[in-house]
Image (cartoon, rainbow, N blue to C red; front, side):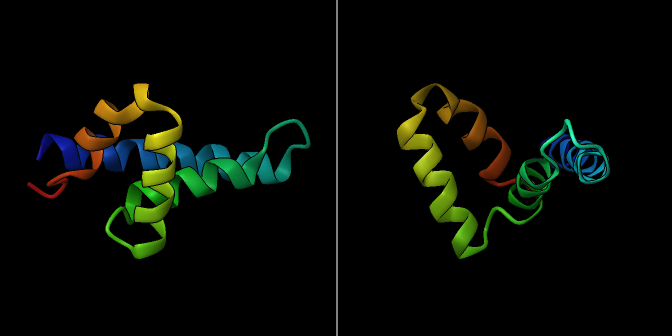
Length: 74
């Protein structure tokens, strides 16, 4: 339950920053909207591939990604 709340809160914040980024030229809005999509739909095949690539390229994020995606609804 806590994982789901954290994931949803981060997704909402990313969506808000992404929308602001689409309107403001100094923020990359597409990047934050992509992060929000990964947080909201971690079980989608495309998201799984992207998360695996992030995990292999940046091993230090492995613990955080596993915490946010594994059994997120529990």
